[in-house]
Image (tube, rainbow, N blue to C red; front, side, top):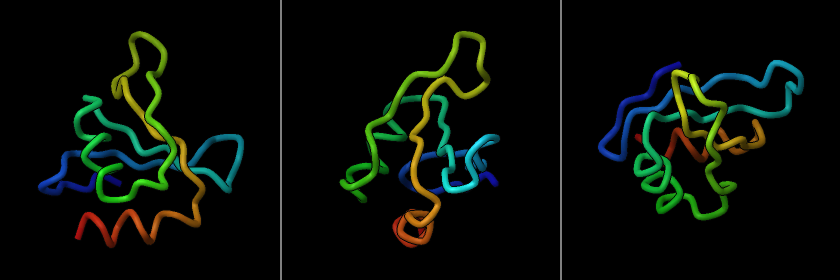
Length: 73
């Protein structure tokens, strides 16, 4: 899923190994920092492997996704 908002552009996908986690991915740390400003309880962003199409991500519990979508709405 690709949500667009005033806070940034994100790609949200389920973790391949753990169904209780989702990756909120972005091309810049600024977009994820904007999202964390809206939801301070989100985990800190991390950088993914070199060559990844979305180099920054937040790995968050799936139960937090309603908060993410509400903040982006």
